[in-house]
Image 1 (cartoon, rainbow, N blue to C red):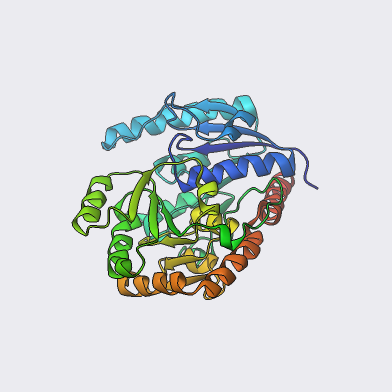
Image 2: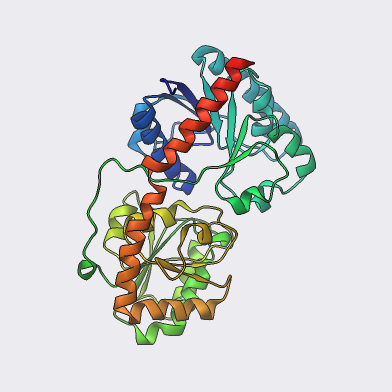
Length: 368
């Protein structure tokens, strides 16, 4: 049934590194490739910054230039500005579907704009974050969306909404890639994300301190930037780990880096479906992760392509790192399994769920 559609994608920005931006890049490529759709990319505050990924070149672009403000009156002013700016774009573009990743008060305004156009909101944060502050009022507005897309069934159970659907993140695969021979990989452990408290990179540093003396031929590379950079640098120095732990900053080449590494480690406090774990699988990396709510256990196949560690247990994290470092056979088996298991989350599979959702929403809209 699917015919070419025009899809408006409304996001905060496409100018900073993060899971939502990487996912958007994959979605733009996959939707254009597999559905021949036209994508209109609307950013709330791109603010003349450079677009991170080349996929933006495949879209028509608008920037609302509306920054968040903390004051009540600024929020009202921004909401009014947002309402009329988006309405003008929708009237001009006449989209078949509108999708947004916004979850602030802007997301609560959107359902009232051109009600006849089907709208989807994606939740990329955990339910604990989404439901914080006046959820009993906010859920009324989210119930007005045609669909609320969540990333796993554990997250779905957290909401008292009747319009939720589970669609996992995915990676756009343009062509098949070969598995990198295990013997060519470096003795490198990779971790990546914003250098903020929620990512708990200090746990990784302290876990490594416990086993460093037995594995001085290995190094840890942490990719990302954020407000905790100086604090983490100081922790590395205090524990005399500067020769084996490197803060590498942001990169737009994480896939190539992963392909040459041996282990991926994640220590997040919460993460509902981290893109970086899919990227690790795609690049054949066995993964060690805390059992945080709720993403890792929905991606990692425990003891098959990775290890799930009791949440916030630094000693168990140390033991798991040592296990994979010391046992080449297990590491090689998990590496191969990760590469094979990734295809569950390839665009070829997941895009079919999106196509079915689009078809159903447009059909329902035509019937009404």
